[in-house]
Image (cartoon, rainbow, N blue to C red):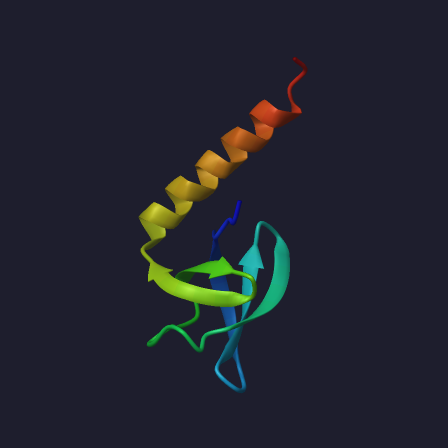
Length: 77
């Protein structure tokens, strides 16, 4: 199973890259597949590449769902 995760762009870097925040982890990714990304935008990230921009409301809703799944997985059965 593959998973693409919403991440907030914190910094633009040389060579069409960016530093994003993935749940508190900062990671450098490529922006080669998307256009017009700015600091503060949310992007969907998969294997180090931004696949598309995502509006903030949708990104936050998706991140909340991931947090709920994680909490369910951590609870005793």
